[in-house]
Length: 555
Image (cartoon, rainbow, N blue to C red):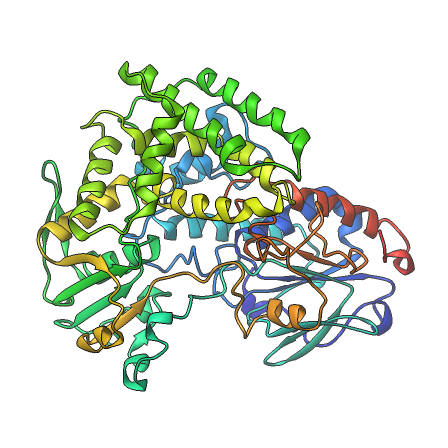
C-alpha cells in the first residue's frame, strides 16, 4: 500500500464528526513497535471489530514498519547486532526451537538465500525490507477506507474537549485514542561543544540517515573527521565513510586487510569520555552452553519476584549473573572461578578510563574469543550470562522492581553491559580493528579542551540521546510540560501501567518503547517475547471496540 495513494487524514473524524460511533485511533511512530501495535490489534480484535475503528499512522520515514533505524535504503555494510534467528516479527512469544524464526528464514530464503542461516548478523537494510513487507501485509488487514498513513513528523499531542489533538505541519487531527511509539528521538547534544565557537558548532552534524548526512558533499574526501562517541552509531559512521565510500576489506588472518579508496576522509578519530570500546558478539564458532546450564540461575532470579519493589541490584540480581558467568567458565575451561572474581573484573573494567592501546587490546581479545580463535574469558562469560538471563532481569526490574536507591547502580551496570553483552557482530569489530591497525582510524578519549574540535574539518555526533532526553520538537516534551505524563523519579522514565496506558488518561493514551526505558527495561530490541504490554493493550482495545462508543472511557 503506497503512502501516496492513501487519503488525507488531517480533518477530524469520529463520533463528533460524522463517524457514526467509530473509534478514532492514532499510532504515532511506525517503526517495529508501532508495527507490532497494528499487527497485534488486527489479530486480537478480529475482522468484525476492525470495521468499527479508524486508524491513522503518523510516520515520517519513507518505509513504515522499518522507520529510520531500519531504513531499507541504508548501506548494506551497516549490520544488525542481533542474530537472525531471534528476529521473527510474526511470533508473539518465543518458542524453544529453531522454528521461532521460520517466517524470517522463509522470507530470506526467497530473497537472500545466502543469508538464510542462523547466527547471521544481516544488514539492517535487509531487516528494513522485511519489516516493510510485514507492514504491507498488516495494513491490508484493515479496511482501506479506515486506514491511512500520514508521512509527517508529529510535533505535538494534547488533550482537548473532544479527544486527543495530534499536530503535524499540515494541520491538526482529533482522535479518541493515541499510541506513542516514537523510539529514538535524536542524538544527545555535546556538552563538550556547548562552549565552543559558533563556527565549530556549525560543522557538527548528525549521522543518520548516513546516505545523506555522510555523503561526499557533507563529508568530503581527504578531510579530517572527529566522531564523538564509541558505540554502535560511531561504528556505523566509520564503516559508512570507508567501506561505504568504496573501500574494500580483503580476507586475511587474523584480521582482514583494508584497501583504501580515494573518496574517503584522510583521517577518522573516534573519541569518547571513558575510552571503553564495545566488545564483539560471539559467532557460531564459539561452542554454546546447553540451556540446562542456565535453568538453575533463572530459577534463582524468578524466586526474587516476591521482593518486587525492594530488590537490591548488585547483591541480589547482579550476583546471580556473576555466579552464572563463573560457572560457565568453570564448565568450559576447567577453572575455579567464583562470582566474586567476575565482579572484581567488572569493577576494574568500569572504574577507569581506558587509553587507546588498552581499548584496542580489549577489542582484539573479544574478537579472538568471538571467532573461536581464543578460549572463553571473563568478558565473554559475563556478556553471555547477561544475555541469557536478561528476560528474568527485565521482569525483576521493570515497573519499579528495585528499591529506589538501587537505580543508580542498575543504570551504571546496564550501561557497561551494553558494551560487554550487546556490542557489534564480530565481523564489524574485525573491520574496525583493521582500520585502526592501518592508521585509517584512531581511538581516544574526548579532550576536555573545547578547542580540540577546531582542528577537524567535520565533527560527527554519535551519541544517542538517552530515553529521558526527548526531542523538544516531539510529542513527549509537550505532554511532560502540561503534566499529562509523569516521570518515575529514580529513572526519569515515563510511567505507564502494565497495559502501556498512561495513568490518569482513562486508558486513552498509551506509550511504548524507549520513552519508558528504566520503568520498562529492555526496549531496544526486536524480540516479541520480552514484553507483553502491547498484547495487553490490544486486549483492552478489543473490549473498547466491542462496547458502545459512548462507554470507551475508563475501559
